[in-house]
Length: 244
Image 1 (tube, rainbow, N blue to C red):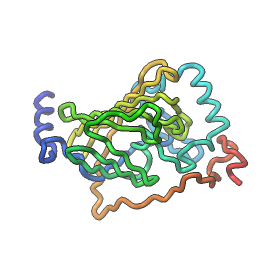
Image 2 (tube, helix red, strand yellow; image 1 turned 180 degrees about the horizontal axis):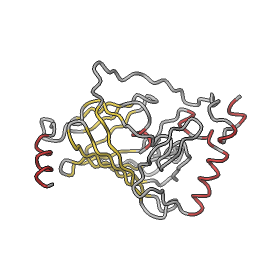
Image 3 (cartoon, rainbow, N blue to C red; image 1 turned 90 degrees about the horizontal axis):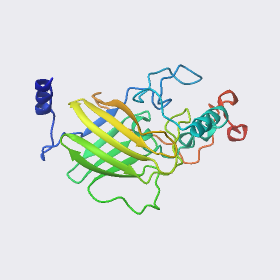
Image 4 (cartoon, rainbow, N blue to C red; image 1 turned 90 degrees about the vertical axis):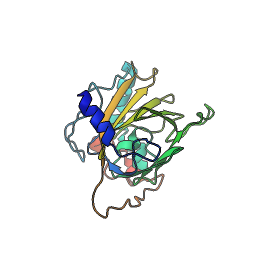
């Protein structure tokens, strides 16, 4: 195994400064956008395996009850349904591809969905604690061949998926991007918020290079404040007033 790992590290594509070369167009091949945890098919939702390491999000009892109420009565409040930015980590597995642009000072993630982008600063400090952003503030560093990204300043207006898995105002996310081979990046995110969860928890999945000839990242138009929520029927928690 050690020999294989060394061989893999030696054959990875690299930038002129010797770091793994993440430049390119990437995509996810999972159903985490619908539900981070294992899930059966439902109205408009495909079945799929979850990406939560260990299987279950460790909610505190009050938070689990809130999640159940949101699923039963407030699915139309999903911020992504209203075209708000998706937040971290949800932005990483929102459907449609994204492009990575890498330099010595930053890594830029440009997403097809929602006109979104993330700027991973290689250096610097997080801004004032009072600042809260949909995508938070990302400060990155290299640990060997792994890009580690510390994400804070996230506002509490985002969800993790369409099943109302949620967080509060003090979410702290640490991401790890590790290139397994030239076409695969292993992605991990550890999420911490003691007021909502009983312990830190992790998600993990692969980012896969899009090698389709002639592929273009297109503009996915989604206007903030969208109210056309006819796909959220009453049977799955939609609000009648939002559907008018």
